[in-house]
Image 1 (cartoon, rainbow, N blue to C red):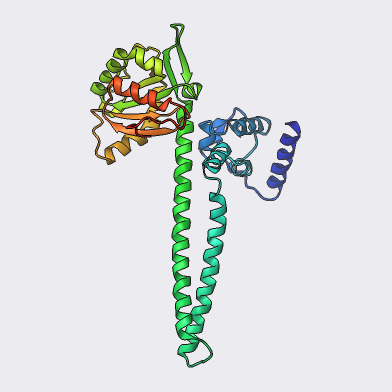
Image 2: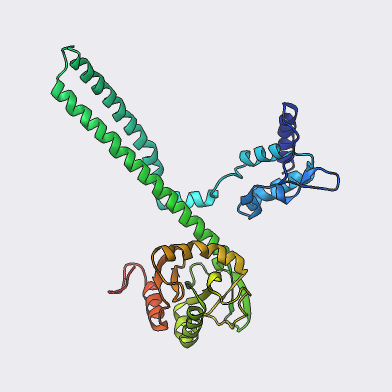
Length: 336
């Protein structure tokens, strides 16, 4: 680590010598000596802790070199990958889910370029034939031109659709990763209340996040209390989340009782930030948030589906038990 830090110091010193201006921007904090330093100078994603190892390295560099300017730190972030929208692990996850997508994104533009070159040659031949130059079969050349143009259009649409699918998968994986860091308060098997992140329940429990108004939240809590034994046996956890815009007053909700199958969100601001997209999608689809929207989360953290309203505990228990069956043995009538 010391050798890497020394190398970075030498690189930044060389950058400083070769013409960087020392004009700190207003978004950087200043220490007692007037130097640019502090956490506020980091990239917004680094401030949120998206790259903890990189964040620690940059903070260590700022402590060792308090004279770094805004431009130097921004260049350092780019070199170390701090300006990436997604983490390396999330991009690996997307590649595992679709292993041949990168191959397609490389080959399809090459094929489209080849078809475009063929269209250019066929077009020049048709232009030459129209000027009276003989030696070209106009009918065959016209067919080749149409085929090449169709290939260019089709391959371009296929490429754009694949790019959109990749971006959609990355966004979904990033949201699942953010969801795994959100914390819950619930009752353990020993009867003690514990606070754990959702990733602690990976491969063990399935969640039903119920987003809605006060009535939907109260209905969800009553449902989880009535079916506590059945829901605990199948490994289902109900998480009622009261949407901030549907509250009667702006005060935070009161602390509620929790059970092994009924959890309460911790750090409500982080939950509201994650649920904002879900609320927006529900409104766009014409769903009534007052009556609630149920978001089913699988053991892997994947969001299975979204359903309007609050399900009955019998329905939730039966669906969870059906999804707990071994692979290859689905139950008829269950939507997988």
